[in-house]
Amino acid sequence: MRRSRILFLILVSLGLLVSCDRHEDLALLERLQRIPGLAVTEIAPLAGFAQAFQVDLTQDIDHAAPSRGTFQQRLYLSFRDEDAPTVFYTTGYGVSRNYESEPAALLQANQVLLVHRYFPDAVPSATDWTFLTTAQAAADQHRVREKLAGVLPGKWVSSGASKGGMTALYYRFYHPGDVAATIAYVAPIMEQADDPRFASFLGSLGTTACRERIRRFQRQVLGRRTAMLALAHSHALDRGYAFTVFSVAEAFEYAVSEYPFAFWQYGSGDCGAIPAESASDQELFDHLVAVSPLSFYADADYRHYRPLFYQAYTEIGYCPYVVDGIRDLLLAVPEPSYRAFAPRDVELVFRPEVMAAVAPWLRNQGERIVYVYGGNDPWTAAALDPAPGLDVLQVVQPGANHGVKIRDLDQQGAVIAALERWLEIDIDESRLAGVAEAEEERHRF
Image 1 (cartoon, rainbow, N blue to C red):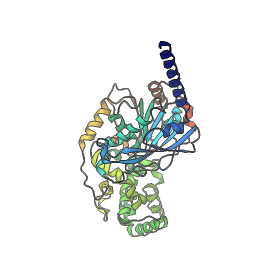
Image 2 (image 1 turned 90 degrees about the vertical axis):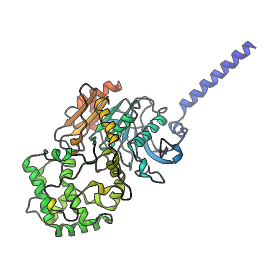
Image 3 (image 1 turned 180 degrees about the horizontal axis):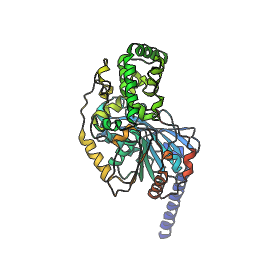
Image 4 (image 1 turned 90 degrees about the horizontal axis):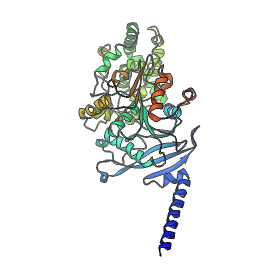
């Protein structure tokens, strides 16, 4: 009897070993498909990756009360190797395609690219804006992290640019143990609905002569209102823009009001590129929409960006328009406000306690974070200044705009050294030179 029991236990053990071996031998697609709540489709991988998948994950609308229902949230998983680290990249918006982020290329990492809730491919079926919060979005990420831990067991790095960088930082606050490090590009941390730091920061960019040329350009196009509006109507018609939420006149004045911010946010800072006063109407208009697009105020963009502005005026804050130099010429929009771009049928109540918790934690406790900012980027007005002694690295690249990347930094070596230490890997910095990153779309921030 004893021998029989021993033989039985040996056979059971062998069976378990065989079972484990079979699990390890499963194709990655099948392993993903066996994870509850995932609908997985294999897609063509990007260059440098072995496999890629489009994944729709069942998420709770309210993570605190799952009975409220679920929605499908899309992500793209790009796989290199099970032993590689994983970059968890968020844009803070929708994601229209799979692409490789700079951190994934630099670290030769797997990548998870996630759509933010309430943007296309991640919209609850019965939209209730009250569930669009930083805590709920961070819980979405935490759920993704838990679901994929078994197939991506290496160290994870959260990252993103602009609103995506902010999203990565909020995730660190709510779930600090989920990742080994964070790379936050151009991520402002506002603690008020209309952060007052932006006016003085804009007033410090460039030379006095440059700032005056910007102001004169604004006044010039507003002074040629009749001609500019005619060109705006033609521009909208040619491109199929619909203006039913905002009129063309309102869109034109918003674009002019936005111009100084947009000039520095995505521009080269070359004030010599601003048309002279002798320029034709067409030259002035073409320059205006190249820098500050009218499309941002058309119906499609209004609908697309409503989640952003809901978040801005309930939790994460935003910047105010700075129009002191042109206020007397504004007729259609005498007091421009970004609140106009939030959902119209929803009460906006700002909850300062959210950022009053997040910002001090990041400033005084958040470690293993790289903050990358551009010296000419207006969003740097709200850069997070970590307390002395924290194991973090903040880099502000002089002259760089909102598109700054690690490959642009004078302190590139310091960033790589920090990541090597935090992730316990060797990084070949020459990988940055060959990054063929498909940049995110040009967002509001």
